[in-house]
Image (cartoon, rainbow, N blue to C red; front, side, top):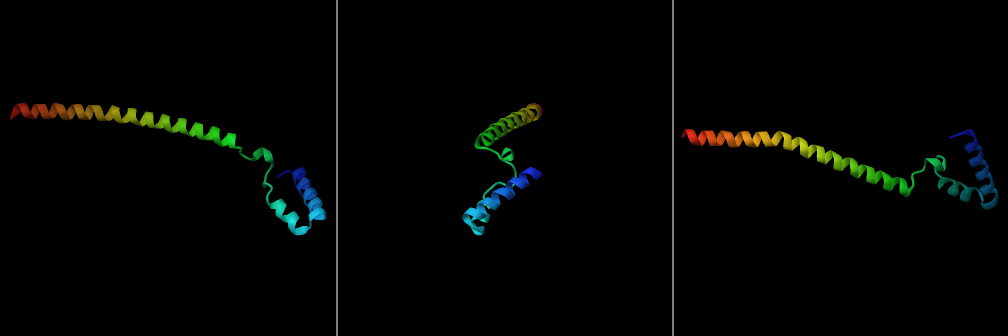
Length: 90
């Protein structure tokens, strides 16, 4: 927290204490964020994060499916070829 912000918070607390009393001033100050308002995430920020996360997961699932298909298809085809070969030899 910057020095100016600390001074501002202290000034606000002093003013609240003079107006409302010590307990009420302390209670209201507890509800203020511990950092500047610029550091607080908004609902829009969270919505954007949710969209980006979904896109990343969708991409990861697509890549996983492609990888599995790349490895499974030769295995399946090889198994079929082996089964046909074994069936012909018996």
